[in-house]
Image (cartoon, rainbow, N blue to C red):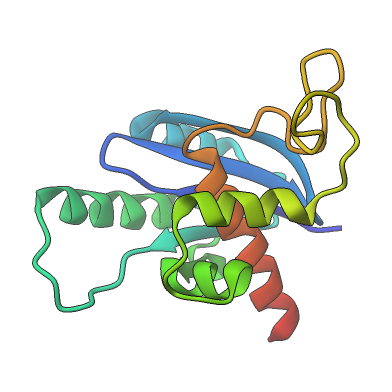
Length: 159
């Protein structure tokens, strides 16, 4: 049983998810300084994966470089920086949707389709407070973090 911390980094806050095998244990979004402390305290996590930025020849702004700095800080904060798996967005799109042209909504739906419908409500994979599904609590930037986790686990199995 392997516990993975996956992160969708941002300039000021980052989405995260802890996955044990394929089960979502915890997820959320927090300010980046708090994320550093969380990573440092996450001694029970066996692995860490983080979405890495790639250059495709387009001009980028200050936010991209600030996110790169946070990625480096997160990696160095993990108990063994050499174990951190960098996952590129293109690889997430290809793994989950089979095309590099996939949008966030396509990725979210592909993630929902991977999990069993056990909760209540309109989307039983997410569920409701009274009938939570396996993805209950995954919101906003935690969705891309879950996509990173699923892709990183697939890459690890393929290696």
